[in-house]
Image (cartoon, rainbow, N blue to C red; front, top):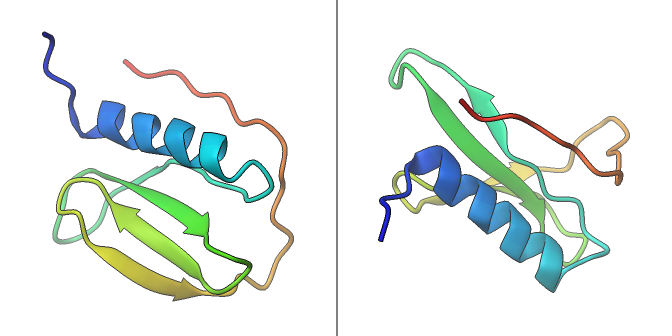
Length: 81
């Protein structure tokens, strides 16, 4: 069995959440910061409440509040190296 990295795990989580809650937007967002050189988070809205950020590296789930902008519900495609 092949090892799945953090990005692969995040994409599997996005696929799983999109399958379970088809009416809720879910994304995989890549970024970097001062603590982690590279990270990937999965923002997801549970029951139209505040958005949650899921860190697939640590397993932490943190409230992100409600976004002020419009959230697109279309399909997002990305390429992984």
